Amino acid sequence: MALAATDRPPGTAADWTIPQDWAGYTPREHAVWDLLFARQTGMLKDRASEAFRRGVEHLRLSEKGIPNFEDLSERLARRTGWRVVAVPGLVPDDIFFDHLANRRFVAGRFIRKQEQLDYLQEPDVFHDLFGHVPLLSDPVFADYMQAYGLGGLKALRLNALDKLARLYWYTVEFGLIAEPGGLRIYGAGILSSSGESRFALEDKSPNRLKFDLMRVMRTHYRIDDYQQTYFVIDNFEELLHQTRDADFTPLYRQLEALPDLAPDAVIPSDRMLSRGTQNHAYRGKFQ
Ligand code: PHE
Ligand code: FE
Image 1 (tube, rainbow, N blue to C red):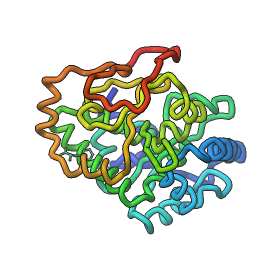
Image 2: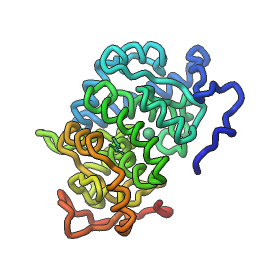
Image 3: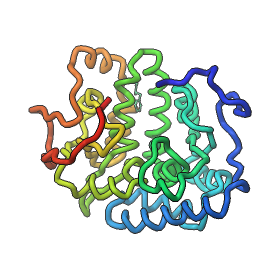
Image 4: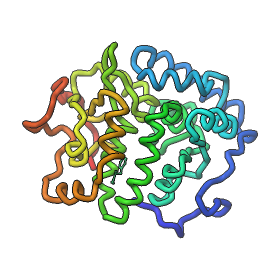
């Protein structure tokens, strides 16, 4: 559920940021990062998008331990002007969008425990940094994220956030990209999950559809399991052009007249790259 400004924890600045307190991490916590990093980079060798792999290199994420947000921000800012700031957990939508609109990516500072390497409810520093930050060093993707922040503020005013949030989900979190060498991952939710990295590209269960903006904004998604559908873009320029350079106000109005679609729906206008069996046993409900 959306948070209200009154829920701001004590010690948090007006923009909900807190110090990362990098010196406060224990050797155990750094070791969890190293373990996750080694495991995911192995897994992603021929699975992650080119832009992600370049970002990991540019930002020197392979250096040992949980990255220091200050150092990381310096490297990132030199490329695209983005910075990373720490927050205590989920923040209110308007705060989140305002940070994005100003090229600040908000990240959790805590790291999961050794016992929860594969599953956790809330995004931690591994998901936020490893999953999201490499792409922010790509100039086109960096512009997309900033535009999304501005779009979020507008969607709030227009009461259309449920629609716009689906775009974030199916691109920033769970997006796939068609590269010359084959399908690759750019969504952070997949990049930071070893199970989903394999599932999203290789499993027979999910549908893989060509990205279509209106189609995406009509589609419910899974929050508690792998996705039933992945949307595939051809490149980040296409994504940026279709979103930043379009006025969503009339689109939101059109969407009100169109029925929402279930996460596994297939409709005649879909451009199907692979039709899923939907054999994976999904838990829970979708939203
Ligand atoms: N151009 C969109 C609008 O008019 C905003 C937006 C940009 C949305 C980028 C998503 C991503 O609302
Ligand atoms: Fe995320």
